[in-house]
Image 1: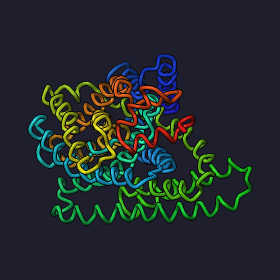
Image 2: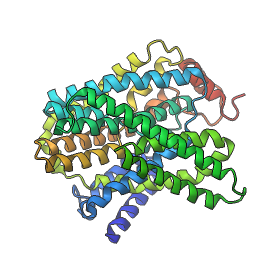
Image 3: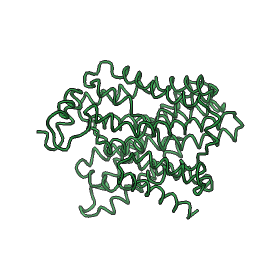
Image 4: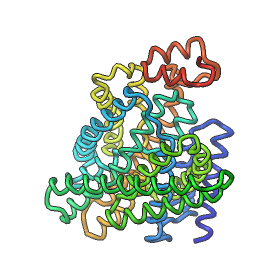
Length: 420
């Protein structure tokens, strides 16, 4: 088991090094590295040897990434706030329905599992979006919108997927039960996280200025206690609790939060570096081959359908220009939470004797492979072509393109150093 962790950490670190030296998308290389050293390749890393211990560990590390995202979440301005709310609501409904339709008619999943796939596919979290946004140097307003979408829909999608799985297994009787429990678990998780974040800030404010190490330890201790406690009270409520706690800490600490976040972000990056190869190593080509071209068509249709979702979500939002909508339509990679949820659900479905468990897991991982691979390689060029990349020195065509993109993004560009 010790060798497994050593191999996973080394594989992830090597992928990050290659990404830095070549400027290739880091998330693509992390995924490819996991496939190469895992069951689909050399079979050196075997996550199944961790058994049930993998699930809580992945949950805690993912919560760290979400907490870091919450710390950085700054939705200044009503236009940006309205854009986030409207996009999340529209995508939450249309994305769920579209994902289920494509999974059933193109990939052949039975309806109960197709709805589960639709909920899982909602997650476009910071584990993949944030590295892409940072590496392509996307202008801040658009980057914040993408990260906020993932931070909200990733925990919401995980909770909804679990409830739809329980509906498929017969543990819940109706969609009304799903809706009621979704509100309870999301609301409960947010409340627990907000309370924990408030308490953490009160403690951190009373510590001496030069005690960064202690602040980090207390933050991690409180975070993991919040997440595990929320999970024990309300299944899958730990993820919304992590986001909520991060937002509260970031807002209340204000300037001091940047010092804490610098430490948290390094740990979050380390979590991404090991989790992506570890979960990708659990995938075998045998789980993808039964899907055939129907699975590929399902994922490609889902990618194209996002353009329609963004157009609908952008109705009445003058702050989003056509360049913004086109860029938003093309960045929706699925990542660690998607992979972790799919792996866990496949085990539960197999234990319950439900047909299609392997197909569900294979389709989810195919979605991760295609979205991360295609969008990871093409999004930087698209952002540059649309003039949505932060220029090193403002002025000229890049600034003019950003100003033409919409008021929200223009404001974000002008807020950068040198943009006065």
